[in-house]
Length: 285
Length: 285
Image (cartoon, rainbow over all chains, first blue to last red; front, side, top):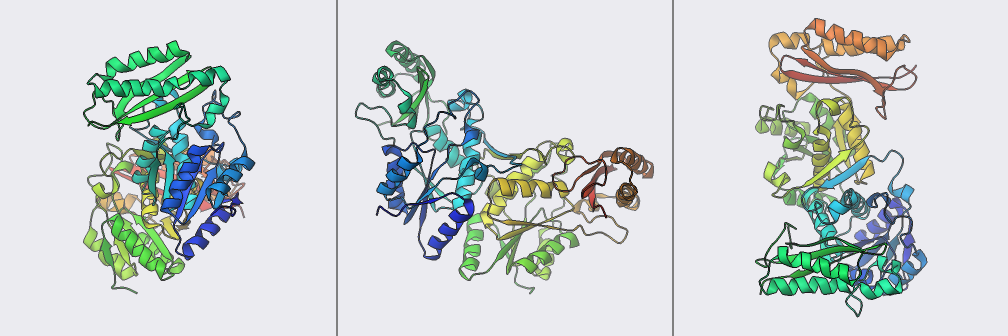
């Protein structure tokens, strides 16, 4: 499967390639990423290969989804290594457009999603999900894949994408894929590279805090009791601050108090200058 | 060409039909409308037939592009007559979805376009162009035509559509078609049906006012001198009020003062309870 990766930089070339595949009756999958790839991304490529004949992974660090004080300029960029990993994973095309290709002069359009994009990361990062919705719509309409695969690591993002894909009738099936974790449970993330050795040792407390809340919910406790205690635990463990620790309906992301339906426990916390997010699902027995 | 019109009401059926055409290598055009069709709409079908093998006209009175005090509930609905006219014009499919088909439960997404959607009708009708952009995106992604044809009668709308189609990489070519007029110069519009006989007699002053400004620009006068005089003329002729009378760059819709490039003169005015819009283009010799 590996050894055939082509790098494509323009929308016109991407469309030519996808049309060529379509003419042969091949199914196409897309994996939109911001690069700095790890095993989590490669699992999305693997899932794509189970659902399609050809896979396009995009690498684009999208400026419009970063806030003014966020890490756009220092976000890791390592295209050569990304290409090598994608090639080994059996990906067929790396689509790596420039900012000018994505946002030509006079660009003036934005997509906003109410409901699922509010609260959680939507409150802490104003404009973030509008930036995500707009760029993902562009990527999907540039490629027009049959399926697009996104990680559950960014759970709210996945909910936002499912929502606008359905609302705008974008002709693609959206698939979510489970979060991959390091041996100590830390969710794989390109931002893990920001951490010092000391911070990296503290980071696994994030998944411990999530499983603690999950255990509490299973024992019948309330989210409003469990979450503040979990936040205290993270601060004691060495986190600088916690943006949120919340229990939400797994589908609508509406606040949930008890384990009376499938829920998602979501957390965002800061360790030094690094902002980490994670989430796990819990369902009633 | 006429006699084959099918009426389709669901997105799934529309996609099946378009896929069937595509498999035969046929080119598809779309004409999005709100129904109450007149010769202006039928000229868009004719232009579609010049550019494609099959034509889908949609009829959907989109609630989200009407303001709370606008004419959504009384907007003329006459599907049987529309179907007959489309059939005669050689249109192949009338796509007439319900509101529930277009906006299912939980719908939460909106598209906004800065720049071209600001000022003119954008100021007088807040939210209007977001409603237009969102529904036209949906219709285009439901049908995925090769070309889509819109009238220059709604000139700002056409500029907004060109902008977001390009910005979002919607894979369709947008074509504009010139405004059709009654014998006395009044631009054809579904809203002309609202007027009383007396109002209908006053209405042609709109195009006279526009051509007056055009003549003035050609003679070297300034927009800032010409437009207020044209507004006075409309009020004297019997219009209740004038929302705007402006000269804009024909492409960017930036304000223009002199005829030093191709410009568009745009007007919106109220005659009794009816709001009429019109526009004409003028280019330097």
